Image (cartoon, rainbow, N blue to C red; front, top):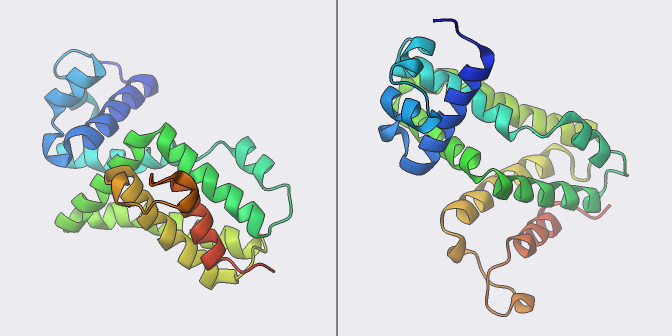
Length: 198
């Protein structure tokens, strides 16, 4: 069988959707084939084992989560102050809502890494690289608060996204939302609390 990049991406996207819906325990070659709408046996032709599939999903999820370079460049043109940081965090939430499956799959991959020491090694590297890139962008971009604020904001947003994507009703309501949780109000609270107004 001739393997092609488009079919591989189709299978990986199906795997991401499955992780988001049923978790890692439901990730089988047969389930990936069915989700991708391809003949049974296709996924096993592309991935030597379930472990290989998980490794590639661990990389592919970042492909889906990384914003387009032009989008980032446009957002970074304005001064790097608290308000620019606020806009970037709102964009992060909007992208999480637009591709909820990829963010839920990322959470499931984190859990799989906690259970499987071998996967932890391969998945930990891109996670560490993402954190380092985020901190480097914050510091080198001259955003307020330097590395400590960058790390605190990364961790705060990670926790907030976990709540928002899994148990949104647990987020607190604000006075202007009449008893309903407003994730963007929570983003404002986090940015105002963590990022100094310099």
